[in-house]
Image (cartoon, rainbow, N blue to C red):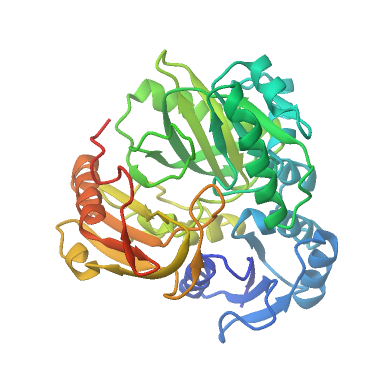
Length: 417
Protein backbone atom coordinates (compact mmCIF):
# COMPACT_ATOMS: atom_id res chain seq x y z
CA UNK A 1 0.00 0.00 0.00
CA UNK A 2 1.33 3.43 -0.96
CA UNK A 3 1.71 6.03 1.77
CA UNK A 4 0.79 9.71 1.55
CA UNK A 5 2.27 12.20 4.01
CA UNK A 6 -0.16 14.99 4.92
CA UNK A 7 1.77 18.02 6.20
CA UNK A 8 -0.59 20.18 8.25
CA UNK A 9 -0.59 22.47 11.26
CA UNK A 10 -2.54 21.29 14.28
CA UNK A 11 -5.26 23.90 13.69
CA UNK A 12 -5.66 23.24 9.97
CA UNK A 13 -9.24 23.02 8.77
CA UNK A 14 -8.50 20.43 6.12
CA UNK A 15 -6.53 17.53 7.60
CA UNK A 16 -9.63 15.35 7.97
CA UNK A 17 -10.67 16.00 4.35
CA UNK A 18 -7.25 14.91 3.06
CA UNK A 19 -7.35 11.80 5.24
CA UNK A 20 -10.79 10.94 3.84
CA UNK A 21 -9.50 11.43 0.30
CA UNK A 22 -6.50 9.18 1.00
CA UNK A 23 -8.83 6.50 2.33
CA UNK A 24 -10.89 6.61 -0.87
CA UNK A 25 -7.71 6.15 -2.88
CA UNK A 26 -6.66 3.25 -0.59
CA UNK A 27 -3.57 5.06 0.62
CA UNK A 28 -1.94 4.65 3.99
CA UNK A 29 -1.41 8.03 5.64
CA UNK A 30 1.04 9.73 7.94
CA UNK A 31 0.19 13.18 9.33
CA UNK A 32 3.20 15.43 9.89
CA UNK A 33 2.07 18.13 12.28
CA UNK A 34 3.13 20.37 15.15
CA UNK A 35 0.76 18.91 17.71
CA UNK A 36 1.82 16.50 20.43
CA UNK A 37 -1.04 14.07 19.92
CA UNK A 38 -2.28 12.23 16.81
CA UNK A 39 -5.03 14.07 14.93
CA UNK A 40 -6.65 10.87 13.63
CA UNK A 41 -6.29 7.46 15.24
CA UNK A 42 -6.24 5.66 11.87
CA UNK A 43 -3.28 7.63 10.52
CA UNK A 44 0.39 7.42 11.31
CA UNK A 45 1.89 10.44 12.94
CA UNK A 46 5.15 12.35 13.17
CA UNK A 47 5.65 15.52 15.19
CA UNK A 48 7.50 18.31 13.37
CA UNK A 49 8.43 21.93 13.99
CA UNK A 50 7.48 24.11 11.02
CA UNK A 51 9.77 26.85 12.30
CA UNK A 52 12.65 24.56 11.25
CA UNK A 53 11.60 23.20 7.84
CA UNK A 54 14.88 21.36 7.23
CA UNK A 55 14.65 19.42 10.47
CA UNK A 56 10.92 18.85 9.95
CA UNK A 57 11.55 17.42 6.49
CA UNK A 58 14.28 15.16 7.86
CA UNK A 59 11.86 13.77 10.44
CA UNK A 60 9.39 12.93 7.69
CA UNK A 61 12.05 11.17 5.61
CA UNK A 62 13.13 9.08 8.59
CA UNK A 63 9.56 8.26 9.62
CA UNK A 64 8.25 7.50 6.10
CA UNK A 65 11.19 6.37 3.96
CA UNK A 66 8.94 4.88 1.26
CA UNK A 67 6.35 7.68 0.96
CA UNK A 68 4.67 7.95 -2.45
CA UNK A 69 3.46 11.55 -1.99
CA UNK A 70 4.00 14.49 0.34
CA UNK A 71 1.17 17.06 0.44
CA UNK A 72 1.17 20.40 2.24
CA UNK A 73 -2.33 21.36 3.33
CA UNK A 74 -1.61 25.02 4.18
CA UNK A 75 1.10 27.65 3.67
CA UNK A 76 2.61 26.67 7.01
CA UNK A 77 3.84 23.36 5.65
CA UNK A 78 4.74 24.05 2.01
CA UNK A 79 8.47 24.50 2.63
CA UNK A 80 8.72 21.36 4.76
CA UNK A 81 6.76 19.36 2.18
CA UNK A 82 8.95 20.53 -0.70
CA UNK A 83 12.15 19.61 1.15
CA UNK A 84 10.79 16.21 2.19
CA UNK A 85 9.58 15.40 -1.33
CA UNK A 86 12.97 16.41 -2.75
CA UNK A 87 14.81 14.13 -0.28
CA UNK A 88 12.44 11.27 -1.10
CA UNK A 89 12.98 11.89 -4.84
CA UNK A 90 9.30 12.64 -5.42
CA UNK A 91 7.92 15.36 -7.70
CA UNK A 92 8.27 18.69 -5.90
CA UNK A 93 8.53 22.43 -6.30
CA UNK A 94 11.95 24.01 -5.70
CA UNK A 95 12.22 25.05 -2.07
CA UNK A 96 13.24 28.59 -3.07
CA UNK A 97 10.00 28.91 -5.05
CA UNK A 98 7.71 27.91 -2.19
CA UNK A 99 9.64 30.15 0.22
CA UNK A 100 8.78 33.13 -1.98
CA UNK A 101 5.07 32.26 -1.87
CA UNK A 102 5.22 32.76 1.92
CA UNK A 103 6.82 36.21 1.69
CA UNK A 104 4.59 38.82 0.04
CA UNK A 105 7.40 41.34 -0.45
CA UNK A 106 9.77 38.81 -2.00
CA UNK A 107 6.91 37.63 -4.23
CA UNK A 108 6.19 41.17 -5.43
CA UNK A 109 9.86 41.77 -6.24
CA UNK A 110 10.17 38.56 -8.21
CA UNK A 111 6.96 39.28 -10.09
CA UNK A 112 8.21 42.77 -10.92
CA UNK A 113 11.44 41.38 -12.35
CA UNK A 114 9.39 38.97 -14.50
CA UNK A 115 7.05 41.71 -15.76
CA UNK A 116 3.93 40.23 -14.15
CA UNK A 117 1.03 42.70 -13.95
CA UNK A 118 0.50 43.63 -10.31
CA UNK A 119 -0.08 46.70 -8.07
CA UNK A 120 2.73 49.21 -7.54
CA UNK A 121 4.47 48.42 -4.25
CA UNK A 122 7.29 49.34 -1.93
CA UNK A 123 8.88 48.19 1.33
CA UNK A 124 8.30 50.23 4.48
CA UNK A 125 10.48 50.08 7.58
CA UNK A 126 9.48 51.22 11.05
CA UNK A 127 7.80 54.61 10.83
CA UNK A 128 8.10 54.75 7.04
CA UNK A 129 4.54 53.83 6.04
CA UNK A 130 3.25 57.45 5.72
CA UNK A 131 6.10 58.51 3.44
CA UNK A 132 6.07 55.31 1.36
CA UNK A 133 2.29 55.41 0.99
CA UNK A 134 2.38 59.04 -0.12
CA UNK A 135 5.00 58.16 -2.73
CA UNK A 136 2.85 55.32 -4.12
CA UNK A 137 -0.30 57.44 -3.94
CA UNK A 138 -3.34 57.03 -1.72
CA UNK A 139 -5.31 54.87 -1.26
CA UNK A 140 -2.89 52.06 -0.46
CA UNK A 141 -3.05 48.64 1.17
CA UNK A 142 -0.55 47.92 3.96
CA UNK A 143 0.30 44.28 4.68
CA UNK A 144 2.55 42.15 6.85
CA UNK A 145 4.81 40.17 4.55
CA UNK A 146 4.35 36.78 6.20
CA UNK A 147 0.82 36.49 7.60
CA UNK A 148 -2.13 34.87 5.80
CA UNK A 149 -5.95 34.91 5.72
CA UNK A 150 -6.00 38.74 5.41
CA UNK A 151 -4.61 39.07 8.93
CA UNK A 152 -3.14 42.53 9.44
CA UNK A 153 -4.14 43.81 5.99
CA UNK A 154 -5.49 47.39 6.15
CA UNK A 155 -6.49 49.94 3.51
CA UNK A 156 -5.13 53.42 4.18
CA UNK A 157 -6.92 56.28 2.46
CA UNK A 158 -4.78 59.24 3.50
CA UNK A 159 -1.75 60.46 5.40
CA UNK A 160 -3.61 60.87 8.70
CA UNK A 161 -4.59 57.18 8.68
CA UNK A 162 -1.12 55.80 7.97
CA UNK A 163 0.58 56.01 11.42
CA UNK A 164 -2.28 54.33 13.36
CA UNK A 165 -2.56 51.62 10.68
CA UNK A 166 1.16 50.89 10.94
CA UNK A 167 0.99 50.81 14.75
CA UNK A 168 -1.93 48.37 14.62
CA UNK A 169 -0.21 46.07 12.14
CA UNK A 170 2.96 45.95 14.21
CA UNK A 171 0.92 44.98 17.28
CA UNK A 172 -0.62 42.17 15.22
CA UNK A 173 2.86 40.99 14.20
CA UNK A 174 3.92 40.82 17.84
CA UNK A 175 0.78 38.85 18.73
CA UNK A 176 1.60 36.43 15.89
CA UNK A 177 5.08 35.86 17.39
CA UNK A 178 6.79 37.72 14.58
CA UNK A 179 9.21 40.61 15.01
CA UNK A 180 7.14 43.81 15.18
CA UNK A 181 9.88 45.78 13.42
CA UNK A 182 9.96 43.62 10.30
CA UNK A 183 9.36 45.40 6.97
CA UNK A 184 5.80 45.94 5.79
CA UNK A 185 4.49 45.82 2.24
CA UNK A 186 2.72 48.93 0.94
CA UNK A 187 0.72 48.40 -2.25
CA UNK A 188 -1.32 50.54 -4.55
CA UNK A 189 -5.04 49.93 -3.94
CA UNK A 190 -6.52 48.61 -7.19
CA UNK A 191 -10.31 48.99 -7.52
CA UNK A 192 -12.29 46.20 -9.06
CA UNK A 193 -13.53 42.68 -8.43
CA UNK A 194 -11.51 39.57 -7.68
CA UNK A 195 -11.37 36.06 -9.07
CA UNK A 196 -9.75 33.00 -7.55
CA UNK A 197 -8.05 30.50 -9.83
CA UNK A 198 -7.76 26.92 -8.63
CA UNK A 199 -5.45 24.70 -10.63
CA UNK A 200 -2.97 21.88 -10.82
CA UNK A 201 0.52 22.42 -12.22
CA UNK A 202 2.12 19.73 -14.37
CA UNK A 203 5.61 20.58 -15.61
CA UNK A 204 4.78 24.25 -15.23
CA UNK A 205 1.53 24.12 -17.21
CA UNK A 206 -1.76 24.89 -15.46
CA UNK A 207 -4.76 22.60 -15.60
CA UNK A 208 -7.59 24.86 -14.46
CA UNK A 209 -9.94 23.23 -11.97
CA UNK A 210 -12.16 26.20 -11.22
CA UNK A 211 -12.47 29.92 -11.83
CA UNK A 212 -14.24 31.31 -8.78
CA UNK A 213 -16.14 34.57 -8.35
CA UNK A 214 -15.89 36.64 -5.17
CA UNK A 215 -19.28 38.35 -5.33
CA UNK A 216 -18.79 40.65 -2.34
CA UNK A 217 -16.57 43.66 -3.04
CA UNK A 218 -13.23 43.65 -1.23
CA UNK A 219 -12.76 47.38 -0.72
CA UNK A 220 -11.46 47.59 2.85
CA UNK A 221 -10.66 48.92 5.34
CA UNK A 222 -10.12 45.19 6.01
CA UNK A 223 -10.31 42.42 3.45
CA UNK A 224 -12.37 39.54 4.83
CA UNK A 225 -13.49 37.17 2.11
CA UNK A 226 -17.07 36.10 2.61
CA UNK A 227 -18.28 34.20 -0.46
CA UNK A 228 -16.99 32.12 -3.36
CA UNK A 229 -19.21 31.01 -6.28
CA UNK A 230 -18.25 28.92 -9.30
CA UNK A 231 -18.34 28.75 -12.28
CA UNK A 232 -17.46 32.38 -12.85
CA UNK A 233 -20.00 34.68 -14.45
CA UNK A 234 -17.40 37.04 -15.89
CA UNK A 235 -16.75 37.13 -19.61
CA UNK A 236 -14.67 34.35 -21.17
CA UNK A 237 -12.14 37.00 -22.20
CA UNK A 238 -11.58 38.18 -18.62
CA UNK A 239 -11.43 34.63 -17.30
CA UNK A 240 -8.86 33.66 -19.91
CA UNK A 241 -6.77 36.72 -19.05
CA UNK A 242 -6.92 35.88 -15.32
CA UNK A 243 -5.93 32.25 -15.92
CA UNK A 244 -3.07 33.27 -18.20
CA UNK A 245 -1.79 35.74 -15.61
CA UNK A 246 -1.92 33.09 -12.87
CA UNK A 247 0.01 30.65 -15.05
CA UNK A 248 2.64 33.26 -15.90
CA UNK A 249 3.00 34.10 -12.20
CA UNK A 250 3.45 30.45 -11.22
CA UNK A 251 6.17 29.98 -13.81
CA UNK A 252 7.86 33.24 -12.79
CA UNK A 253 8.11 31.92 -9.24
CA UNK A 254 9.47 28.59 -10.43
CA UNK A 255 6.45 26.54 -9.37
CA UNK A 256 6.24 23.41 -11.46
CA UNK A 257 4.00 20.75 -9.92
CA UNK A 258 1.03 20.29 -7.63
CA UNK A 259 -1.81 22.52 -6.52
CA UNK A 260 -1.90 26.24 -7.18
CA UNK A 261 -4.25 28.88 -5.81
CA UNK A 262 -4.12 32.37 -7.28
CA UNK A 263 -6.10 35.55 -6.69
CA UNK A 264 -6.47 38.11 -9.46
CA UNK A 265 -8.09 41.55 -9.37
CA UNK A 266 -9.88 42.87 -12.45
CA UNK A 267 -9.84 46.66 -12.77
CA UNK A 268 -12.78 48.63 -14.20
CA UNK A 269 -10.68 49.28 -17.31
CA UNK A 270 -10.59 45.54 -18.02
CA UNK A 271 -6.98 44.92 -17.01
CA UNK A 272 -6.04 42.10 -14.63
CA UNK A 273 -3.43 42.25 -11.86
CA UNK A 274 -2.08 39.53 -9.61
CA UNK A 275 -2.99 39.81 -5.92
CA UNK A 276 -1.11 36.71 -4.78
CA UNK A 277 -0.37 33.08 -5.57
CA UNK A 278 0.16 30.06 -3.32
CA UNK A 279 1.68 26.60 -3.79
CA UNK A 280 -1.33 24.88 -2.24
CA UNK A 281 -5.02 24.45 -2.89
CA UNK A 282 -7.76 26.76 -1.65
CA UNK A 283 -7.79 27.44 2.09
CA UNK A 284 -10.22 26.77 4.91
CA UNK A 285 -12.96 24.28 4.11
CA UNK A 286 -13.73 26.07 0.84
CA UNK A 287 -12.52 23.08 -1.14
CA UNK A 288 -15.64 21.19 -0.07
CA UNK A 289 -17.62 23.38 -2.45
CA UNK A 290 -15.76 21.84 -5.39
CA UNK A 291 -16.22 18.41 -6.92
CA UNK A 292 -15.00 16.99 -10.20
CA UNK A 293 -16.04 14.54 -12.87
CA UNK A 294 -19.00 12.21 -13.04
CA UNK A 295 -18.05 10.64 -9.72
CA UNK A 296 -17.94 13.98 -7.95
CA UNK A 297 -14.41 13.49 -6.67
CA UNK A 298 -13.24 15.96 -4.04
CA UNK A 299 -10.53 18.55 -4.54
CA UNK A 300 -8.36 16.61 -2.10
CA UNK A 301 -8.67 13.47 -4.22
CA UNK A 302 -7.60 15.46 -7.29
CA UNK A 303 -4.60 16.89 -5.42
CA UNK A 304 -3.55 13.47 -4.15
CA UNK A 305 -3.89 11.90 -7.61
CA UNK A 306 -1.64 14.64 -8.98
CA UNK A 307 0.97 14.04 -6.28
CA UNK A 308 0.97 10.33 -7.08
CA UNK A 309 1.47 11.04 -10.77
CA UNK A 310 -1.97 9.64 -11.60
CA UNK A 311 -3.84 11.66 -14.19
CA UNK A 312 -7.29 12.96 -13.42
CA UNK A 313 -9.28 11.81 -16.43
CA UNK A 314 -12.05 14.35 -15.85
CA UNK A 315 -11.21 17.61 -14.11
CA UNK A 316 -14.45 19.30 -15.10
CA UNK A 317 -16.72 20.57 -12.34
CA UNK A 318 -19.02 17.88 -11.04
CA UNK A 319 -22.06 20.15 -10.51
CA UNK A 320 -23.56 23.01 -12.54
CA UNK A 321 -22.85 25.59 -9.84
CA UNK A 322 -21.58 25.59 -6.25
CA UNK A 323 -20.47 28.05 -3.62
CA UNK A 324 -19.38 28.60 -0.05
CA UNK A 325 -20.09 31.27 2.53
CA UNK A 326 -17.26 31.82 5.00
CA UNK A 327 -19.06 32.80 8.19
CA UNK A 328 -17.11 35.83 9.41
CA UNK A 329 -16.21 36.74 12.96
CA UNK A 330 -18.11 40.04 13.29
CA UNK A 331 -16.61 41.14 16.62
CA UNK A 332 -13.88 40.11 19.05
CA UNK A 333 -14.86 38.36 22.28
CA UNK A 334 -16.08 34.95 23.46
CA UNK A 335 -17.97 33.00 20.81
CA UNK A 336 -21.28 31.94 22.29
CA UNK A 337 -23.08 30.43 19.32
CA UNK A 338 -24.84 30.61 15.97
CA UNK A 339 -28.63 30.51 16.04
CA UNK A 340 -31.03 29.35 13.30
CA UNK A 341 -28.65 26.82 11.77
CA UNK A 342 -31.45 24.35 11.04
CA UNK A 343 -33.47 27.08 9.35
CA UNK A 344 -30.46 27.90 7.19
CA UNK A 345 -30.05 24.22 6.25
CA UNK A 346 -33.68 24.14 5.12
CA UNK A 347 -33.13 26.84 2.50
CA UNK A 348 -33.31 25.46 -1.04
CA UNK A 349 -29.80 24.98 -2.36
CA UNK A 350 -28.03 24.84 1.01
CA UNK A 351 -26.16 21.54 1.35
CA UNK A 352 -24.26 21.86 4.62
CA UNK A 353 -23.52 24.21 7.50
CA UNK A 354 -20.32 23.50 9.41
CA UNK A 355 -19.48 25.68 12.41
CA UNK A 356 -15.80 25.04 13.11
CA UNK A 357 -15.20 27.15 16.24
CA UNK A 358 -16.25 25.67 19.58
CA UNK A 359 -18.53 27.66 21.85
CA UNK A 360 -16.67 29.39 24.64
CA UNK A 361 -13.54 30.01 22.58
CA UNK A 362 -12.10 33.54 22.30
CA UNK A 363 -12.33 34.88 18.75
CA UNK A 364 -10.94 37.95 17.02
CA UNK A 365 -12.35 39.90 14.14
CA UNK A 366 -10.15 41.15 11.32
CA UNK A 367 -7.58 42.53 11.04
CA UNK A 368 -6.37 40.84 14.24
CA UNK A 369 -8.08 37.50 13.55
CA UNK A 370 -7.19 34.76 11.09
CA UNK A 371 -10.11 32.35 11.18
CA UNK A 372 -13.79 31.98 10.29
CA UNK A 373 -16.61 30.78 12.52
CA UNK A 374 -17.56 28.19 9.93
CA UNK A 375 -18.67 27.51 6.40
CA UNK A 376 -21.99 27.20 4.54
CA UNK A 377 -22.06 25.19 1.31
CA UNK A 378 -24.58 25.48 -1.51
CA UNK A 379 -25.25 24.04 -4.95
CA UNK A 380 -27.76 24.79 -7.66
CA UNK A 381 -28.57 25.02 -11.34
CA UNK A 382 -26.89 28.40 -11.78
CA UNK A 383 -24.30 30.55 -9.98
CA UNK A 384 -27.00 33.17 -9.33
CA UNK A 385 -29.16 30.59 -7.56
CA UNK A 386 -26.20 29.50 -5.43
CA UNK A 387 -25.37 33.07 -4.46
CA UNK A 388 -29.00 33.78 -3.56
CA UNK A 389 -29.13 30.70 -1.31
CA UNK A 390 -25.94 31.69 0.48
CA UNK A 391 -27.22 35.23 1.06
CA UNK A 392 -30.47 33.85 2.48
CA UNK A 393 -28.47 31.64 4.83
CA UNK A 394 -26.36 34.61 5.93
CA UNK A 395 -29.53 36.58 6.65
CA UNK A 396 -31.05 33.68 8.59
CA UNK A 397 -28.21 32.80 10.94
CA UNK A 398 -27.53 34.90 14.02
CA UNK A 399 -24.01 35.03 15.47
CA UNK A 400 -23.61 35.79 19.17
CA UNK A 401 -20.38 37.04 20.73
CA UNK A 402 -20.27 37.46 24.52
CA UNK A 403 -23.93 36.42 24.50
CA UNK A 404 -24.96 39.36 22.31
CA UNK A 405 -26.24 39.24 18.73
CA UNK A 406 -23.70 40.75 16.34
CA UNK A 407 -24.51 41.60 12.74
CA UNK A 408 -22.17 40.66 9.88
CA UNK A 409 -22.08 43.78 7.76
CA UNK A 410 -23.25 43.54 4.21
CA UNK A 411 -23.25 39.83 3.35
CA UNK A 412 -26.99 39.30 3.11
CA UNK A 413 -27.75 42.75 1.71
CA UNK A 414 -25.05 42.93 -0.97
CA UNK A 415 -26.56 42.65 -4.44
CA UNK A 416 -25.02 40.59 -7.19
CA UNK A 417 -22.29 42.33 -9.12
